[in-house]
Amino acid sequence: MTLSRGDRPVASRRDRRGRARVREFATPLDVDVPTTGNLTDDLERRARETPDRVLVRRPPVAGSPGWRDVTAAELREQVRAVARGLVASGVEVGDRVGLLSRTRYEWVVVDYAAWYAGAVTVPVYETSSDAQVEHVLADAGVRALVVEDAAHAAQVRAVRERAEELHQVWAIDGGALDLLTRLGADVADDDLERRRAGRGPDDVATVIYTSGTTGPPRGCSLTHANLRFEVEVTTRALEPLYAGDDASTLVVLPLAHVFPRVLQLACVRAGVTTGHTASITRLAEDLRSFAPTFVLGVPRIFEMLFNQASQDATADGDGRRFARAVDVAMAWSRARAAAEDDAGPGAGRRSGSRVPLALRVRHSGLERSVYRHLRERLGGRCRFAVSGGAPLGERLAHFYRGVGVDLLEGYGLTESSAALTVNTPDATRVGTVGRPLPGTEVRVSEDGELLFRGGQVFAGYWNDPDGTAEVLDEAGWLHSGDVGEIDEDGFVRVTGRRQEILVTAGGKSVSPAALEERLRSHPLVDQCLVVGDGQPVVGALLTLDRDALRTWCESEGRPRDADRVESLVEDPDLLAELQRGVDAANRAVSRAEAVRRFAVLPARWTEEGGQLTPSLKLRRTVLLRETRDDVARLYDR
Image 1 (tube, rainbow, N blue to C red):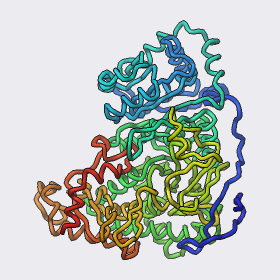
Image 2 (image 1 turned 90 degrees about the vertical axis):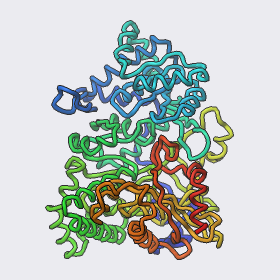
Image 3 (image 1 turned 60 degrees about the vertical axis):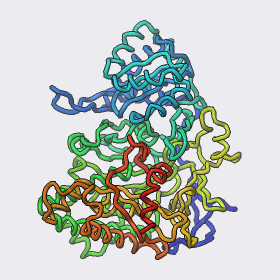
Image 4 (image 1 turned 180 degrees about the vertical axis):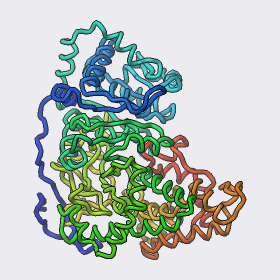
């Protein structure tokens, strides 16, 4: 088997667009990755070379006119002060320091401080259940823990008995950073520097517990070398995002997730300004006031922003104009994508000039009246967005590209320190997750599973050699569990999860994720679960978007209190509207894959309820168990 390294490989089959499929592809490593030192070196270098560079802007507080600047020198000084406190508290080299908090500035300080003290950071999702918190603290042997507030502290007290190695707990809102700073006042700089500089590339930097869709979380041990490799190759592949003195991003995802965590590290490395927001309800306001030049998110966030814009337009009486603007934006993006395909990878934005003239004229007219205002919802300066964590779908990608924000989809795992592949500004193929990052190889196994190898791939799960052997083979290939294909230019398409493929009674294999994305394109649909394993036809369970439902009720002349989902799940007019959305989704698949039955559920699924992961992906095993009766009724009709 020949491994392609950027040249045109031997074709095996062809994809749906006529491009040859290949079994392997690799992108050469074209960037120098440090072979010594650790992650703290980037902050040291940044503070030394550009001490006055603003690395963080903290959210406004009462009495402050806006976001508050933190320079590289100030960040380093606070990190070192907190690190001294960790040392003084008894944290030893190699000890695990836990972090249980929402995304905020102090999270970043404690993360770096643990590394300066020679420790290993263990993040815990702030929405974790008591059982999950107990498992992570006990499994990782966390010795010291920083939580956000009194509620988290109480949660830890309730499970502390099993966390036998936990000796210290501090709360950020209880003055943890000031307390640690005072505690470490007598720790000598030389002692701290020996700890900081003593950690090498192969030392574990963090243990991140994957949420998983079944079973307890497993801890991914990521080394300083893993994360530095990831930082270097992602900043190279996405160089336009990090370029320029005005480059900035608002971190909107939980820093306990590897995706935004690597973003934060890359921004320190590149000198990009970051802000943090932990509240989805404040996201729109924070985007406007912070005005990032690029953002990272999961598809649900980009879907939510789109739905808000659509609902606002409808409420203002501009629903039809907005719908026309969406159609033109998507048509323009598809035409641009076709031009990019013809020109080949590297054409990038230059392909926009090849869009048909009439479409360009319509698009230009809407730029002034609609698209500019849509970009203002992201702060007015946002040029790029990156989506990961779940399938994006072509609809959202084309919409955002069409309004002037290049939405770039990538793919990765916690086990791979985040990204393995990504679409880039100059090489995008909508509907794929991009090409392998520099120094990364991808292979399709005999049964269609995507395998990856590169410097970002972890060494194994924490204290779990059997689990490691399940996903990491002797040749260093990471078995992703995802099914996919590679085209002749190296673009990877993920078609489903091996364990999530449905097989109908007729023997048809169906990937639910793609169908679910199409069903969610209807404004009324908030969430959906495609079912049908072993059944005669494919079905779907839907939950409704409350804001869109309210707008629909008003448009139908229903009373103001008629938007209660419980009273509408069998409403014939609503079901007819949803059927139109199902019919539209079915047009993209074969008859055997089409959704033939659906039902509306009164309650949406939540992370707190255990039905969603922290990155808002469906926990299918949980949902299939909880909705067993609903599925049975669906097929008893």
